[in-house]
Image 1 (cartoon, rainbow, N blue to C red):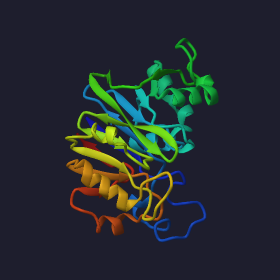
Image 2: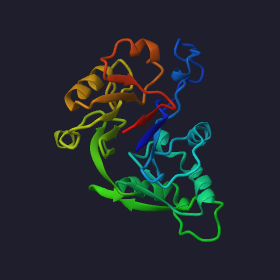
Image 3: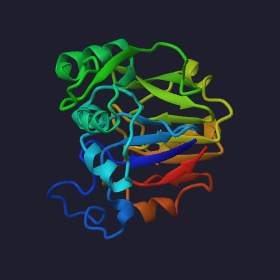
Length: 253
């Protein structure tokens, strides 16, 4: 399988509108971060998105992404959901309904806010044609086991995901012990790392490194970063098996 980081940024993206910090003014493309999302290409070519952020159209054009076969939702904050309407392009191209997977409260939110997208397939493809699929345990999709990983995001209970020997954990403030038990023997971990200082709803660098050390994945990539984090500066400080993620990075697992 192959994972492409569509966006490694936080809710404001980087550069931040109106900001003149060194990261926001940087010419390094690895400091240009769209909102957090990834695309996973399965063994037979199917593509699964993790979240649909508001930059989905830009990300798809940049990465030449022309198919989406399913979406795994972590939660419903705007920076992870509000690109849902851009799924219509993939419905039009493929002439097929795209299934969405998530917790019951996530799907209820999508139905309430984006109910027009939940439709049966027919002859009309000018709107998204999506279906809701509630998950609360591991399930099979395109021949691969997908395990939801419950984590805390401040006061909210949200999901990360494990596919094979890769796990994706964004917007984490705490990983419960029961979820840590689902993260053994990973080759690849993508992990939330908002900034250098503490935050109520996200782990910061020190906590991210502590979790990486505890989980012991062979390789770790930091995601969902604010403009406080400059790519080269942080890269020079990290252990050999921890890396700063960036938009467009492709990883095999």
